[in-house]
Amino acid sequence: MSETAPTGSSAADLLQLVRTGRATTRAELRRLTGLSRTAVVTRVSALVDSGLLLLGEELPSTGGRPPGALVFNQDAAVVAGAAIGRSRSQLGIFDLDGRELVGDTRDHEVGVGPDELMPDVAARLARLLEGIEPPVAGIGLSLPGSVDPVHGSSVDSPIMGRWERVPLAPYLAEVCDAPLLLANDTEALARSQLFPSSVVTDMLVLKASTGLGLGTVSGGRIVTGSVGTTGEIGHTRVPDADGLVCRCGATGCLETLAGGWALVQRMTRSGRPVAHVRELVALALEGDAVARGLLRDAGRQVGEVLAVAVNLLNPRAVVIGGDLAGAFDLFVAGVRESVYALATATAVRDLAFLPAAHGDSSGLVGCAALAIEHALRPEAVDARLTA
Image 1: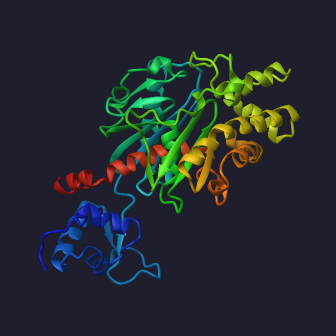
Image 2 (image 1 turned 180 degrees about the vertical axis):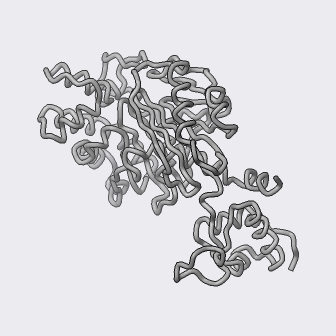
Image 3 (image 1 turned 45 degrees about the vertical axis):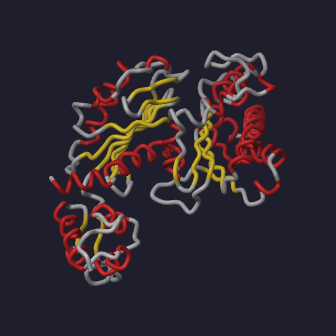
């Protein structure tokens, strides 16, 4: 048999097979890749020498590990995650399996700019990394609105206007020399649904919080569009919002009816002042009739637009995350009502409505997943082996 590796049989591909549990021995790697014994041994040895793989015989016995087992070393490196929103930042350090080692979540002033917030984010990440020995392989960071991942900056965000075109990597340069990977918050939420794996490979992922965003997962891949501005469901014009001014400057946007910021305004006008949508959600869970009604009505409004996407894309599931998902049953009741009424019977026959897999931490987990995927891509693995 030739020693030349067939397509998909590099050292990085073998690592992925072990990491995902498809192979646990050299024999299984040979069977799955068609590589010769020598080629597999050479690649596995390089992965072991790099620290990315461990030999099962060198680890404490689990009672079920076969002889010659190979184990992915989740402690070979760590990644940092930073989910930055309108009024809160969630930070965490994760191993390569996506297990959070340490975290820090704090509220910040609405409207804060990068010069005020990012030095604080950098200092907090540095503190989280104290005492952690593995190298940092990447920093995944998310922001609301459209972003430019190449230049590492916000592009267009009604609620993060002071961040537009400001490169963020320099703020984190002194924390570590790891690359910064940037995504918008809805993409991060969608990415978390696929991490570490998911049986659902076609889904719509709704970020329902202060604003509204929609991620699309097709065939297990996130659809990002030509310039990374997919999912702006909140700024879809709807007849019921005609004449209502949105925070983006336009009129008639869905957000003016169903965005968290609009619900907060309505709740305050009802005589129950709240400062944030999370407070409104808490009141709804306590049984406040006005809050409950606002959440269900918001779900109906979102469902009317979502039904079009369901008809067009025929997803297996609609996943809902964000602050409004804190009252999942209330909000989703309204969403279901409209989707079932307006989408085709075939599209909704097997459609499931699911909460975000990682709950309130989903955005942060998505940031970590972004960094982990970057760190374990074939080019990065090859560079580590070469080094």
